[in-house]
Length: 438
Image (cartoon, rainbow, N blue to C red; front, side, top):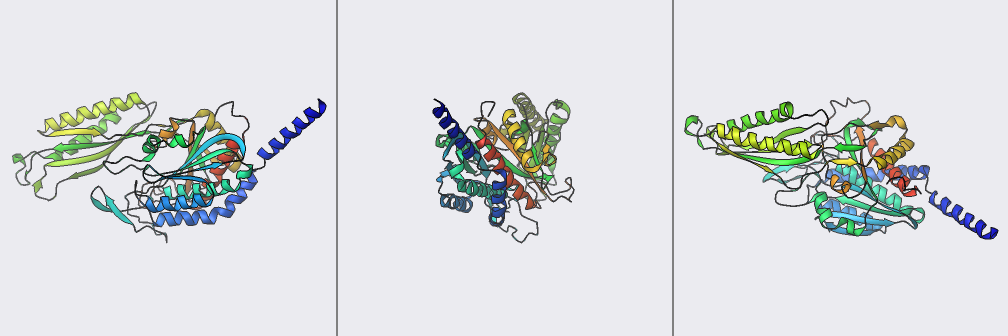
């Protein structure tokens, strides 16, 4: 009996030692060694950006790299998505790590030597294409994480699913894509994660800092289209027509009062923005129609519906008051709120503090930007956090914002992203007790 107990104790010690073999120092050293390659990947993706559902080159490079690591790789999910599975040799939970790959229709104005000169067609127009939101960094970071974890698989517990997602910024009109389509096409049929993690580089934090928030973090987002129909006439005889441009201007002004004067924003913020307006072709012709595109950001279903109802009334009745007609179309597949699981957030915050020190980990407020990462977080506990990429000496208020044509990634922040995701993943996998939350 004593011998049996001794053997059992020795086995438990051996298992515990094996599970504890992957140390923070070890993954830090691996990350530092791989950092130059991660930066090279990022620069290559930055030089060759691709719009949503068109990430053919990017996804090809990602898939080839993942196959070279001996991972189980599946391509073609949601058009250009790539998913790889790493199975550790020790028992443990399944996690998912996600990066987005698409760029934006923005003409780059930075002076980096790997500046994008790419162009593409977007909504019938030839536009510049730029990684103006940092998805090139996300893709490169996750490729690095995959390589390091694959090298540790003999001592790694559990399973890691790496998801390289297309079209986070939205899909071309008439198409489906992004996280909703990945879910529809059976992403979690490959393997179902117990926890999901993702990061986003951000201009509102300095390099070296990471930011996290428990609970509602990033807003739910809707995209909408308003079409105003008037009657065309000579610009010198406006009384002979109905001017949709003037009507559109009045609709925009009235829409702004919905948030500023009609919505209680004391609990959560709301934002209503018109981002594009198109109408008319010549200085002396009153146009027939005007099209406006915009976005709505909210944090609760009730406030969202209330604002949409008010928008509908404004659009219809302001147009009627001008003798015009107008329609409001809410686009399909709105993004839900990114809601970080509280128990999982505590684990992530602890990992980040252990890796970088408490001063580097910032507690964030709610953010009115949005992310389709929320489609995953509805299905499993998840945490999405931010990584700073603005140089330490630069004023955060004046730093070029994400989606700006001058958006700049301080590449020292890429090392922080790589290190943070490695620590978050390995700490979770090696945590022997998942009974007290995710």
